Image 1 (cartoon, chains in turn orange, blue):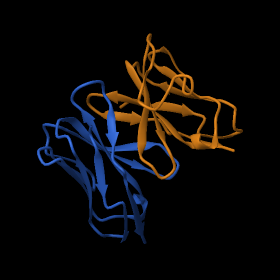
Image 2 (cartoon, each protein chain N blue to C red):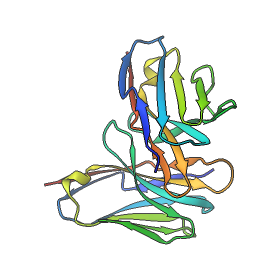
Image 3 (cartoon, chains in turn yellow, cyan):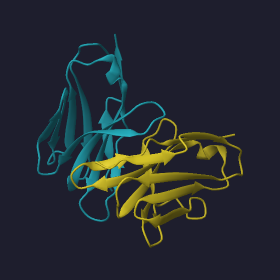
Image 4 (cartoon, each protein chain N blue to C red):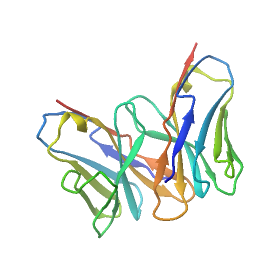
Length: 113
Length: 113
């Protein structure tokens, strides 16, 4: 299965600032997925990132708040913009393989103060 | 809209017990179902992937079954160990549309020595 390197692993940020999370995959993939896990909750899909096109956002998530880049088939970034304490969550990237299912990065634990 | 529920929400057992975690989903039109393990504040580790045409998968002390028609899956853990303590998540992938995973609410397992 794919190996995903995600960074940073954790960060504490001031409200009103932005944080960019990076995911690097060890193989080329068409789609990359970004999830959010709020404290005590399960995972919610934020958006799907295709290389060469705009990301597709789920209901309740907007590009201005969560801009995504996908410059090539092995890399993607998610930015959490103008952060508030409600953005404190674990953010995860993911890819899919038909044989192995989904593989997730190690997660970014974000605390906004 | 697919909804995934896991029972129980939390489980505490002494070391050595065999245990069963349950997952139910409302739409039986799934492509596959995947079980994950999540340690506190960390990413997800894939445990087992069951394709829609399969009835069960086994890996070591873990066995997962799938009854698609009734919308149920179970994860059986044999001879539990303290190292099994974690949150277990099931997730289903739909057949139509892009490859979106819908997650269950999770079962938090504590195995005491």
